[in-house]
Image (cartoon, rainbow, N blue to C red; front, side, top):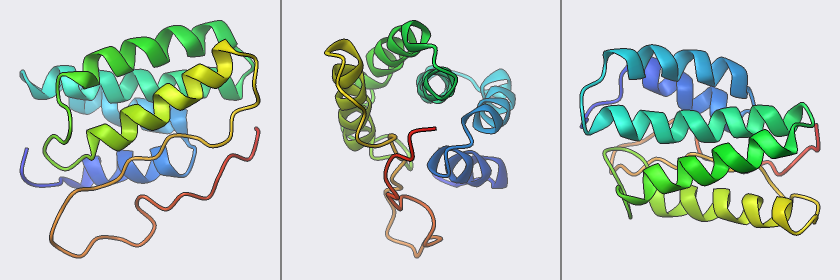
Length: 133
């Protein structure tokens, strides 16, 4: 997974813009075609996207379950895999999970940060905070 396909870029942008349902659709298509180890990697990110979607729709229980599952899957790719800073993503997701488990207001949505030496789109990995939707 050395090269970023247009579908992967689309998923990253959707995730980072809080378009979690659209990201789910994009990642699901990639996941369905992937082989291991990419398949489990995509599944972990998919679970985080769906968790955030649940949270946007006030389904805290679903968000907690999927955040935990996504982190569990992604931990095996620590600290980075292919193009994603997995350490940062898991830390952000765990912080969100901790907020939910302690009834604290979430501070920010997790973001996908790209690990590359090449120039990347400036909108990827930009943290614009949590808008509470």
